[in-house]
Length: 127
Image (tube, rainbow, N blue to C red; front, top):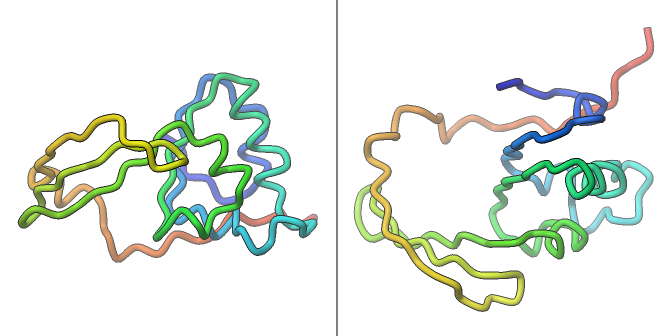
């Protein structure tokens, strides 16, 4: 895997699986018309055209720019049952339910630091 810091690292990706944690930092629904919203203008097209798969997280989908939400195939809505056991409802953008699964994530609890705060992608500074 590769940790990305700059927008241009997303250019020309083909057949890639991307995970963007806290996507609202770079695809904020309130900033959809700003020049700085490079993500929804360029990267979403690359995801569609170059066989890329995008997984994203956000506190709630309404915070994420509409072009991203409309191109999202499935939403996973977890509901905690106990400890790290969850029931996950799989829906579409209109909240139509497709399926649900029960998952125990206890074995993965040390793989990801939930207190880590991801930084938004930046433009590279010219030297």
